[in-house]
Length: 73
Image 1 (cartoon, rainbow, N blue to C red):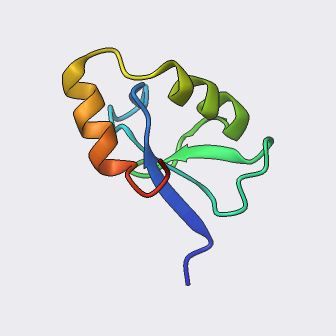
Image 2: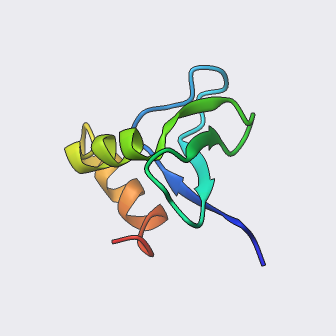
């Protein structure tokens, strides 16, 4: 059983360009979000939620996010 969950952010990792992020399954507001590829700290969970609520920047981003984040929505 995994203790973390992957999701996609519309904002890419500044180190590797990946949009796939990882957060603990608990998802407390102060839980750290890390890039799933290079493991760089990206932001806190409450900050990621704000970005997710703003939505994607384009229709193609929206389709990708819908497919990747379908379990969360």
